[in-house]
Image 1 (tube, rainbow, N blue to C red):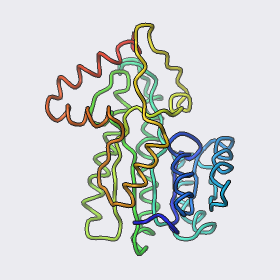
Image 2 (cartoon, rainbow, N blue to C red):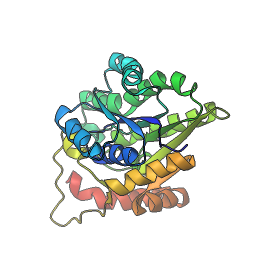
Image 3 (tube, rainbow, N blue to C red):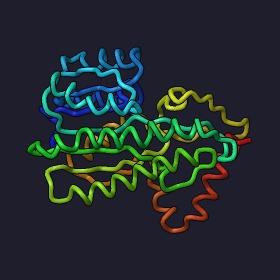
Length: 265
């Protein structure tokens, strides 16, 4: 599905990959409904995306507010017209602690934003998408969905849930006009930690991981929508761990555990 002329909903549009998705979608001729819960950063995205006269409407929304999510399709259609694509990009990480030290309240927040929010958005938009000549859904999971990251076990579980939900959705929508893509980003240069309320500091002996830029990640995702690619790993780390986890999952887990040890010390 070519995005030019299409109405695309992007969650988490206030920063990081969501901002880049909004800017690049507008650059390809799409009309974007930019959704985020932070008014300041959403306004910045709006300014950047509309510099060349692109069509963008902003929607201030917490995706964990299920009643607000249910009404979003009506709000978007009133401003931009019927929605042709949904990009479930918004997400947060958990505090960098072991499961035994993670509170139920912290776990609940992660699941509400990372799983129930996207699930509610799917429920809200799928009926309309099925009525479009062609449509697409892209859900952002994580490399952590298939490679266990100590200190982010609950986050990984939330993204693994998105992985399986998306794969099941792909089967359910087979033969319809709606394409589906699940994305597994590795380390991406965004401010997800700060937006999640976390202060992450690497140990003195630790090396900062090589990160893929948000702009490169956004381009890969839009290309995947246009080529109807069902599965996308972003970054050398995500691609390598995808292969290694299939070959030797125990060794793959050891590799990640060693890399992340300083964050748990």
